Length: 167
Image 1 (spheres, one colour):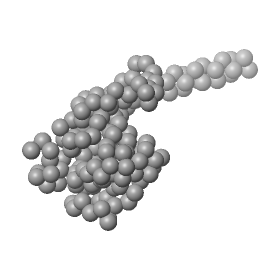
Image 2: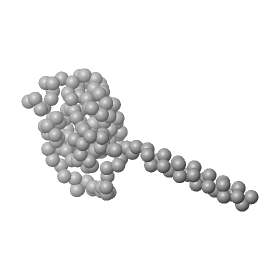
Image 3: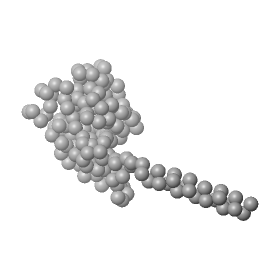
Image 4: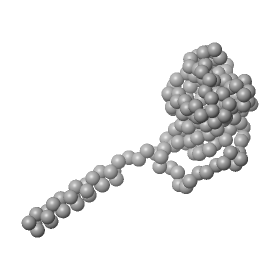
């Protein structure tokens, strides 16, 4: 009986060891394995700056986490836009997740900026635009959104004439 208990215990230890080795060899999500310390930013600590050239003039940006140019890494940035600010139809190389912090961020799908075909997303709204999906936006009142994605970040306009980098 004592020998049987030892065999059972040994079998349990071997199974546990094999399971832990299998888990250790599982790949980790590179986007989740980068952060080395906590991040805590109060609204008054945000450092607003000019946005990347792909974003139309008049908005301000603040990177909250990560590097928007790094591959396979999560980043978050805020975009502060004035009233009646427009972002013409465009798409991104990865899924775009956004949360409306304040104001009204009107969003629509498609290749034409049509304010009548947009949906008002108010403070607290959450939106996900799939990779490659054509969409547009405009604001009502000063509006702040927070965008999350896996880098590298990019914005391609449906119509090159709408791209502020070409002006």
